[in-house]
Image 1: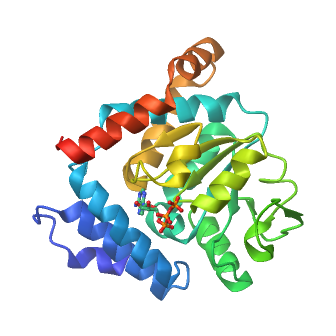
Image 2 (image 1 turned 90 degrees about the vertical axis):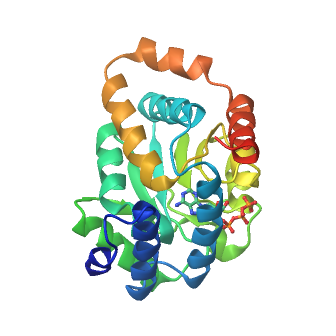
Length: 247
Ligand code: ATP
């Protein structure tokens, strides 16, 4: 990405600035919405308070998410405009490592933006990208935001939703799906309704979930043990304590 080169690596907050530039570039490419810029700003504030690092409880949540993805009958990784701009290749690698499908899902859905994101994921190695058929609906949401693919999120038992809005996260939870949420705000509704809330920056979270998945692959006993020992409430409390108290 050309903008990446403009940030000197010596800058103390290099990673954070790089992330911001990726979102800007995402808007320029028609991948990320303008609201995505605001979401990014909120995320940056929480990340700053977390010390811009993966706290231990987030690492445990990332391992639990990997276990759920591997144990799933049908796992889907949902991709929005911010996720696509920030970690396109990493999302493709996660889908490959866990056997999950990738499905584009947007808060402000336009066919053009969905196609751009699907193309961008393909440029980063994705073979099959769902989200364009939109032949199923999540009950309880207004028309445009309810759309999903019947053979994607519609059929999934486990869904990873990075940066999901609270309404949709709640509606997906009510359908009985296991939700793995990446959100830097432990108080957001998405994090609160998640089976596994991952309070971490998506740029650190996704590669770490992939690493855990590679480690847990082929070992169902360890996967089950990781799932059984994970407690969502503790993860949220730890994250909130880290944010309020300083790490
Ligand atoms: P809710 O309705 O669940 O309370 P919200 O209205 O706060 O959520 P948005 O405004 O859509 O939701 O904000 C997106 C969320 O994504 C914010 O909580 C923000 O902290 C989080 N976020 C933004 N960027 C990142 C990132 N890079 N990694 C992880 N989380 C992020």
